[in-house]
Image (cartoon, rainbow, N blue to C red; front, side, top):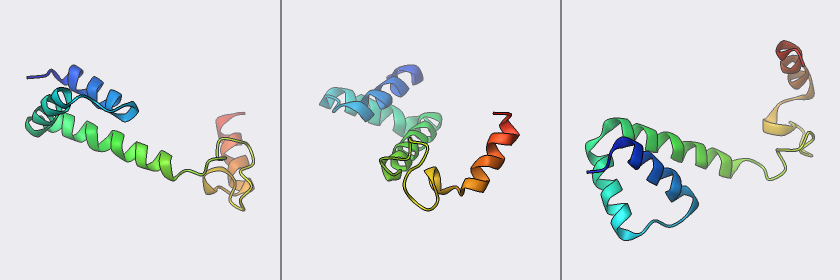
Length: 86
């Protein structure tokens, strides 16, 4: 059986490329048996889904939308900047 370290490594690799059948099978078996790795898998898939929904130009300072990057108003962005000391 895979270790948790190996399983999380394979999960991360699986986000970037298609894993071979044998690697996927071993990973599925480990995740079925390990609640910590199931939780990790849910988390990385959730993060991936959020990033896919993010506007393509949200990384720029002005995203071209009314709400700016991540839907924040200019006033809220300034408030956050001040609280961070930047």
